[in-house]
Image (cartoon, rainbow, N blue to C red; front, top):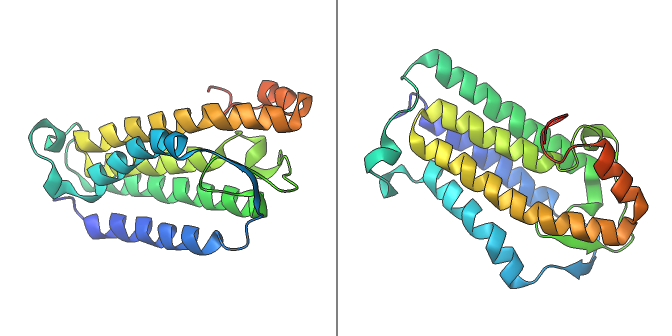
Length: 189
């Protein structure tokens, strides 16, 4: 058992509740991805969440440690979790009514390039990935690292369609944005 696993869960639950409440008031969709497309990127994310949220489902090497047990690593991971989810909240607030949990184009969609969107094109995904990484460090088990990899896969699949639609919607403005700002990790990826 992790030192304070309930604290990790509480942080994720508080973030999730905020996320649901903040979804109210989003602009109406003018275009929305298909159910198959949604399933393609949602399934790896669901498994990632299950890996960190339901340890009783897993055994064997997934429960083995890749980091030694210790309070300093736990608190370092918890800090990454809080910073990551905080970054995602900042990005979510910044994008405002243009936000959607699925790949969509909103009515009167705006291209946001300031705030966290000046650092990375998909800061919500960056923040959530950092949250998963922090959780993995706090847990110290392989299941956490596998969750990070699956969340990354989910977001890369989702980004592929989002980038296509944003390019179709905003044309050269989005092409230029892609040249100037990395997708997930500033100056890297």
